[in-house]
Image (cartoon, rainbow, N blue to C red; front, side):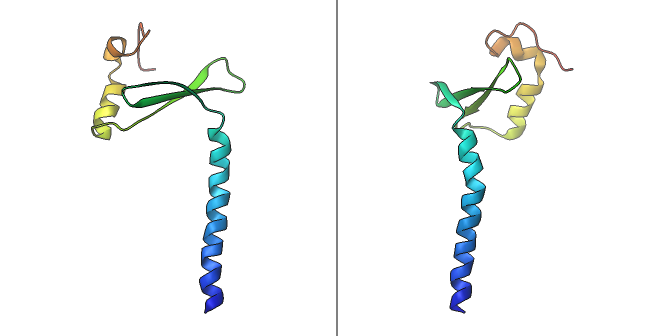
Amino acid sequence: MRCFNFSLPAFLLVTIVQTYTPLVAEENEWRFTYEADGINIHRRATEGSKLLEFKAAGNLQGTISEYVSVILNTDEHPNWAPRCLEARNI
């Protein structure tokens, strides 16, 4: 029975380390750009593209459906998205 108690935590530890390691390596490529209103913006270059990837992280108050409805309402994008002249669904 002692062998089972030791094997399970060791297996879980190895599994977690193997799963976590690729995520850490990928996260190192992101560069912090700026922070505003508790939201951190990061960016990175994409291989084979002239465009930069970006991600925003922060704690937001609301439901997922509220955020999805704002994103899908392309008529309002020029009113709140910086440098957005036009937005449309394709």
